[in-house]
Length: 502
Image 1 (cartoon, rainbow, N blue to C red):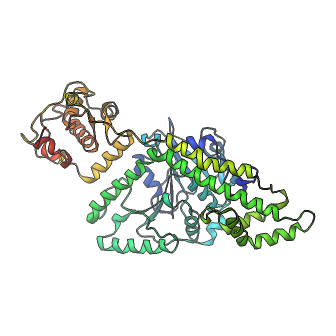
Image 2 (cartoon, rainbow, N blue to C red):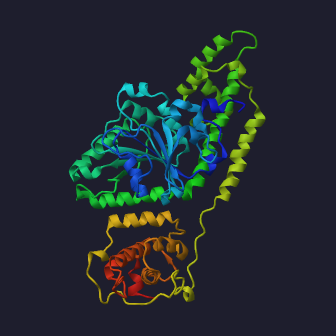
């Protein structure tokens, strides 16, 4: 507050900023599939969503969890003490009229929130036509986002001027950025290679980083692939992206600490810069001339502050933006450098943050269950069995789990927040009961699915359980017509339990 940090960089943080669910920001030009992507992740539409080949989203939409489906206008969202958007009041009513929250009871939203952004159009009229600073708003969301997805359409790889400015505004958040090449099923295998190369060439002119950005290729909507030449690639990429998204709740606390460290370092440099500027100001007259001189010579001011206080250059704010902001301030009102305050920031970075890191411990590695306990924990009652899965083997497409189907099962698996890669009986019970299968049948489903008999299900076993539930629903009169798991449903990771039961 003393050095007006909020006026130069970003508003002060509130409790809701730390308590908020992980946030995924979607950014892209119009008709790249941002809204469809969110609906694909939720497995359902969200309130107020519209999809079409023309620009359909003209506002920022925060898709969040709620007990009922409703759309909350931006002005109401910004004053809601339970939502982390209070700082958006700084952009005024013109922006808030283009902002809203869509609340939905979709299960995934209990763990992650999404922000759908307006499709970026080309041309100068797009920038002039907006009544708010689009790039500044993008930067605000990017600073608070846990993951930033840049979506590209396989048929529209150009980067407009406004999209370029928005991407450049993401500087400092490079570790959070992922690229999604969407609608890739609309081109053949050979064309996809050329499209991918063209997209990376376009990005290379905008993103000035030595690292290669992670790119996910696929078709992220709930429709079959138009061209299935690359189906296996799309399924694998989809699974990787889902893992990336589902890891956000686990890593959210660490990400917030990381952002806090970056902010503290920036605050420290900002205090030194303002203190140095104040020290250069004349006591009586000539303030206006000195202000113009300092702004013009700000690069040397950066160098002097960096050399005097031995600060890393990467902690300094963007030079041109800092100069622009300085023009609107009266340098005579700046505070002198307070070394005690700066030393407190050093204490934060050297003492408090390490303590905070120690509090965020990784999940404990679970010990394997003793042999005598491996035959229990069926949440539906009954015990497991030692049947031979290779007898009386039915032949049916229901008894094969394909990659795309497994990706859908994996999404449900990760939403249940597995620990050490497994779900307990209590966690699985709710998901299986929701399938509508009778409890008596679910006992058999659990027995067949819990292949290693440890009382928990990993991803492969969970996928088997859901497939067995689907089989059971098709023939209620004879739900699961076998006593042993068909070999086609046994994943390679579990084959050893049949070849060597010990």
